[in-house]
Image (cartoon, rainbow, N blue to C red; front, side, top):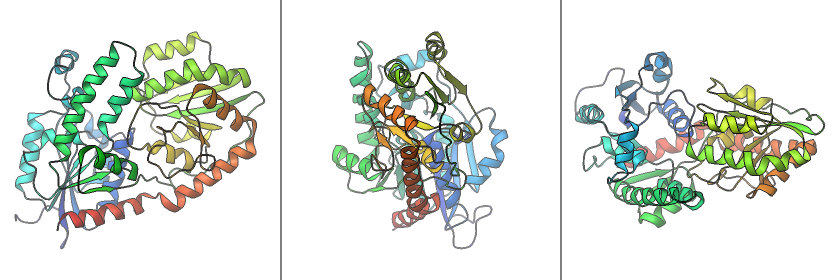
Length: 408
């Protein structure tokens, strides 16, 4: 064992976290989950070292980086071009994993491992490409999704010939996930549902669920005024360069929204998230809908606060979506598909309204807008749930306990 790390308190164990993503801005579920977990671990039983890529503008996030770790080790963020990604279709690795391959990253992680941390958390299966083979025995893989499911679900709804591409990538991801997860003694999943799916798919002996959390003080409750007659504002938040979100918003635009307007002709939608595809924005504009695409925002709360309902029209994805709990914490009643709330301890009709097809989705939105008392009841029940069961402090206490188990 080498000497104490800078800032290491007596009795602290050394935790190395290897992430394939820079954690800021916190505009994606995985970043939010990892950053909040590390923040609550820091200063406790563990001295936290984070190893991750760094974008060119990382200096502006110095305060945020210090918020999550005692020490940050980094390398230049890799940026494979389109030709490299196309070529990767014929390779062994899934294309989505290619973006995380980095010789510089492996070198930084190798030096960090040479300092002999007590425990290593590998954040996402993608980060395994930065690790040695085999990884150190005291290593935990934290998977935020059942990754292969995302590709398999996309293949089911994609048109030909893209369906074949997605199916091919799904097979590669299934093989990659099987190989990588089996290399770790312990795996963290983000819900009991995901933990069960991973055990069933890959025969993993030691998978633990770490539930999703939310900052209920930051996402404060806001009572909703009644919407204007025949109107109302619906919000969606999420990175709009995500394939899952793009597909969900296209479904909303072309299949759901015409049915909403038939009942609420002055309804409007706020699509809040970075990098919305210009073609999608142009489609909404050409249809003459009252939609606003914000692009990147520093804070989603003002947009959710002005909405009368929150929609999650996702049909593709895996893991759990933190945006569900954020909207619920703010008192915005939620309409969601099963995929949108998958793995969360929420009850349809009590904490949110469930809808799968376009007619049901439009009907649920119109119902919340037309019946403010029902909307308020759903919102209040959901807020009570997240207040009592879903704080980040409670989630991190479980992570800390499981980490100590991983040391024995």
